[in-house]
Amino acid sequence: MKVRALAIAGPTASGKTGLALAIAAHLQARGGAEIISVDSALVYKGMDIGTAKPTREELAAVPHHLIDIRDPLTAYSAAEFARDALACVNDIAGRGKVPLLVGGTMLYFKALLEGLNDMPAAHPEIRAQIQKEAEVLGWPAMHAQLQTLDPLTAARLAPADSQRISRALEVFRQSGKPLSSFQRNIAEDNSPQPSAASIDLANALSFQNVPMLSLEPLNRAWLHHRIEQRFDDMLLHGFLDEVTSLRARGDLHIDLPAMRCVGYRQAWEALDGTLPMGELRDRGVFATRQLAKRQLTWLRNMPKRNVLQADGPEVLLEALKWADAQLS
Image 1 (cartoon, rainbow, N blue to C red):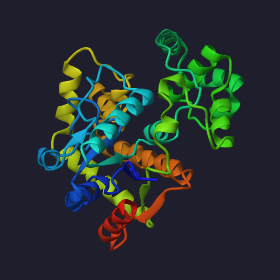
Image 2 (image 1 turned 135 degrees about the vertical axis):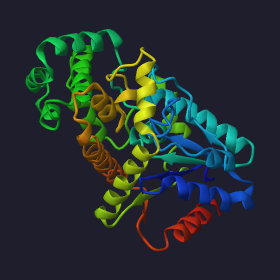
Image 3 (image 1 turned 180 degrees about the vertical axis):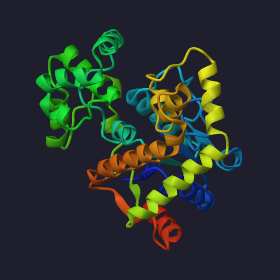
Image 4 (image 1 turned 120 degrees about the horizontal axis):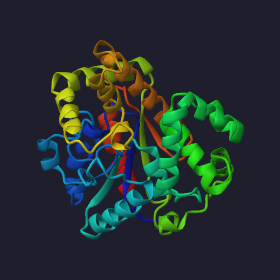
C-alpha cells in the first residue's frame, strides 16, 4: 500500500520542528514535502512566543499548514482538525509532494489516524452552566460531585483541574454516561467506531499508510533541561508582553481553550496577581513537564509507532533513513 503521508510525533521540546525541516529538505529529491502542524496551540493567531511557533525563516523554508488559522476566541476541535488535515494531505499528495504530519497533540493524531469515538461533542450551554456552578461552589466541590458520578475519572484528576473536571461533568450531563466508559471502550476496542464528524477518517487514513516516527528521549533529564531552556527563552523574548497584549483585547479570558495552553494560563495568573510573579517560571516549567509526561503516555499506547531516541547521537541520520525506507 502506498504511503500517503509521514507522521512525526513526540513530547514538547523533543526536537520535532528541526527534524521535520531536515526531512523536508532531504525529500526535495522526491519532489518536496510540506508540513501539516498537529498542534492545538499553533492554530491560534497572536500566540507565537508561548507556543514556540516556527520562525518566519522556517515557515518560508517549507510550506506549513494549520498554523494561525483561528482567533484565540474561537475553539478548534479534534474533529475540525481531522477534517482540515485530511484535506491538506489530499492536496499536498495530489501535487506530488510528501505530507509531513508534525506535532505533539496526540488527540489530533488519534482523530486523524484512527477516527473519533462516539463521545458527545462539546455542549456550550451545559459547559456554561457548570462554570456558573463552579464560580459559586468552587472546583473542589465540583470534583467531589464528579466523584459520585464517575469515580474512575475523578481519581485521576486534581480537585483544581477545572478544564478536565468540567469536561467530565459535561459528558455525563449530556449523555448520562461517565467519561471513563467512553475511554474504556477505546482501550478495549482496537477499532473504535468513528463519529459522524470524523467523515469516515478511519477509512481515509490509517497506520497502514501513515507511518509514525516517535521522538522519545532515553534520558528524561535531557527533555526536562530542554523544557527549562525553552521556557527561559520564551520569557527572555517577550512572552509576558505577548500575554499582556492578549489580555488587553478585553474579549479573552483564562478559561478559553487557547488561554488554557501550557504557559499561557500561568502567565495570565501571574499578570492577574493570583500567582506570584516570582513563581511563574517554575510553575510554567512544571506544567510543561506534566504535558510532556502525558504526551509520552499517549505515545506508548500507539504500538505501531517507530521509536527514535530523541537524545541519541545519530537522531538526524536515523530519521532520514526512516523517511527513505517508508517512501521506497
